[in-house]
Length: 497
Image (cartoon, rainbow, N blue to C red; front, side, top):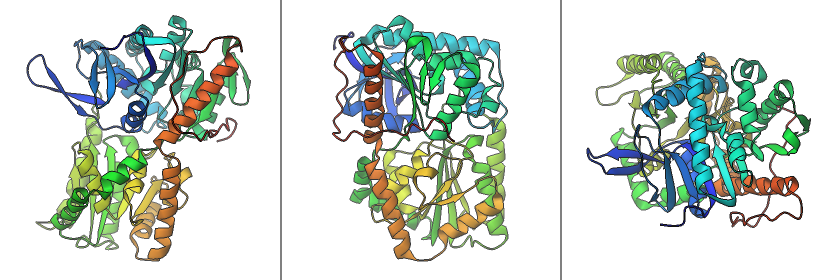
């Protein structure tokens, strides 16, 4: 086992990139978990031989460090009460709804906030114990927004970055948060706070200006004499990895099998989301239902595959959302299905990476239409898999992905009439050469801005911030190697949305 004091690159997330498979005894087997955060970070941590800290998914269970898929994994324990109050309460019932434009009304509870502080403190101490002097620590997402400031008190020698994968809300929503000052102070413990897009970074800057007592110059905040940079870094995917899977003959054979099993429909629409009101599944089903009812889509030639990936719900399972989606699917299938061909194939299950890529290859249109999202990773995975430049991407204006792919069909998912028109535009036979050119342009941009370039941009900016923060004579520890030679500047437009 390596020396626990020699971890120079540490990534910290609310959950580890694996889910436990208990075998009834003391041993635990692991399987890869499916989330946008994990999909983005796994290739980055593996390439840099980093250490990953997070909760292992088992309440009241202490586990030691282990290796998984080329990554050193350091579990953080979680009492059952904190699973309920921190994750199910404050994270999933207070913060997540608020940060997604209050699509669901957020609920607040003092007990949940206390649990949030306890868990963030536990993470901070876990990182402080294993990080090498001067190590780079990269903290992720809304579950751990207090960790940067807590960690800086414990280990002021560390280079601390934070990245928010969900949108940061406008000030009219953020001001409702009872602990808004504590959240801002927690995030400003980092050297660099990164967001998915300039709208979120501008919202954060406005919140700092409105509620903080810090001097601010453009995209730099000055808390207690330090410099904290604020910037946008749109997250991406391992484009080359998905291309390799998509070119695999077995994967292509499976994609052909899927179309055959579905009766060789002319058009397959695909959507992949967590079962969450912010993902817009209900609006998508409403638009599809009306198109069938108006006979503008033929269920004999068109079908929808809706994959609802099971999330890690901890006391906030949203039974009402589940019931509404289930009812809509049943209604559509009751009216428009054949005995052997449902109009909607609804899969509430976690798919293997191979099966997911086969679905991307089988689908003619990808519907990535959340009501609000920081970045739609599934949309970028779909693009990466379309190695023959076929297929059509329909994107929500509420996703940070839309700004980077103007060639895609875009829609306001709240506007059902516009949604219907966008679906028809996406499936309409048209200029196939023109569509291939558009797909080729999106795929080229994706390859140029893949997950490794995203990480390099962020870590370069983090190191640059550290150089400005520390005296020239100070001795900086060796930083994590950045294998990509091309240094690029992130978007820093803090003053516009």
